[in-house]
Image: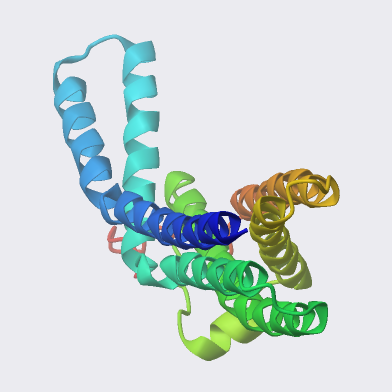
Length: 240
């Protein structure tokens, strides 16, 4: 019995570490985004200087515009506004895993889950709001429309956007909590199949929620730009 408890405690620590690792990987990927986009802009520009074929030039220009758009979006919406969501998700998973591995009573686990869901949902929703803003900015730049600067203050994060962002964020948090609790439960009670079903269901819902957040981004890219491309002024200079 002691061996099983030691295994559960060890796995709980591993899951907590994995949650933190995921947050770190996401942060590193976003921190290196600007460097990668700058390299793409540089080499496409160099190829365009040499390329004469019209079809190839249009392809290179499209690649360059998308990379430049991502660079502009990541500059106007820095990584810290999106990484907040990963931190909340990792912290929420750690709390749930610790509750289950310590064999707390069901009431305590549910109470902790409710608190984590409410707290993490707000942080994840703010990250979703900023992700949608990034996609909007990138689309406006690529479409040669006027790029409307985003509002990144706390009030804008809390009150801006659409109601669906709250729903997808809550579903995302709930699904991740279910996966974390299910994995810890499986290891604590290997003779019970219900925890395994919780894990499978949680993974399925997690994928569904992730696709929902991506759809919000696609919708932001498909919505017409808020402002048309500036018309030249009477003296031939572009308006600002």
